[in-house]
Image (tube, rainbow, N blue to C red):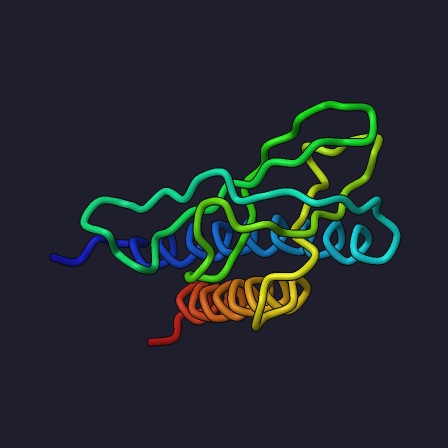
Length: 143
């Protein structure tokens, strides 16, 4: 069944969705790069690892905690390697003015934090460009 304008709507929504993801991860990339250059550093640890149902290895979330210089305990979620386990000690870089929003792991093993964010920005950018192209082809009457 063909829905008139369905392709336009689908490709337009997907382009907007991937554009929003690109913007989100680009902002995170800037924050991570800034914290790695100028952020305060301390030690923290992986406090929990959550796996999605059915233990899919691609759906693991890592949560970390650290104590700021003024004694506040901050917990945050960040990207980490699959082999990182609960209790792993890590170095955390953060902005003392807003530790909860700026905290990042300063070293994650094989991939640097900047490369991980850069890979996300690149992939989402390609998705945005691809769906925007398909949207334009549909809008201009292409097949």
